[in-house]
Image (cartoon, rainbow, N blue to C red; front, side):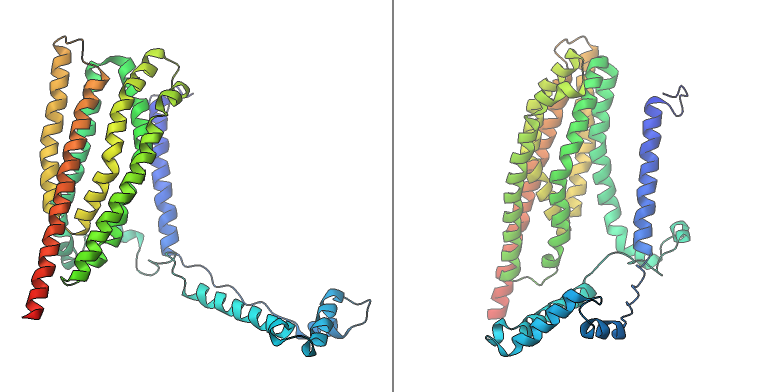
Length: 359
């Protein structure tokens, strides 16, 4: 490997990650800003086609002539449903339907063609556009900072007090952790994509029923995702031997596996609730909750560090993850409770709208 501290070892891996991100952005922008080139229609030489059908036995197109003669002979034979003419017509209709479908198919390629330039990244947004996004700035920023604070505090405690073996085990655990999280995260993203179209409707029984049904379906999917992720976590003790050759590191990884089972058993439920709340624009609640977590999680993590520095030999990697699992359960209960409360408000609004119409 390279001996340079700027490009070798972990620094080289970090640079590779950075460049891969910029490369991905380039390809995405190229896809969005460039429309596909229209296909040129093929030129058909009718004279050659006629010569093939009327040529001699030794000329080119023997198989085509045979099929053509068989089609002509079959015009007077059999039922119309079984005739070659009807078969040919059905094929033409099928091709026509495919052309119409392809013509109407939506694609994101070229979506920003003529609407976006690289220099636009350096321009400030228009005042009216900024006003539309203003209500989301503080809640979303608070949410992201609150999320990150827990991971930062955990990494700080592990690296500053628990030793190299715990740091290595934490790296293995976090790698597996981040591999599994996107499965449940997709529930939140899906809810944010689908549910807003229902929320925008006027209060009614149909709207309330659709939102309740959506919530039930997401929670059912959460149960399926939870079982799948927990099943994957149970394999960590067997997989860890392929990720480290150090027995102490492998033992630490195995000791944290039960905490990961608890975390992922409710992670799908939490992410579904978060997505449903975001879709219904309950951003103030989410922002306030993560503002509390921003203070609470680092506080309890630092208490673990204080106990370790005081000489408490019982402090290990599981102590850090026990704080994190409590954080997961608390936010899951809070978000599910809030989701159910919002649904009750939706049902009440539907009843009030029905009473107004009847009166």
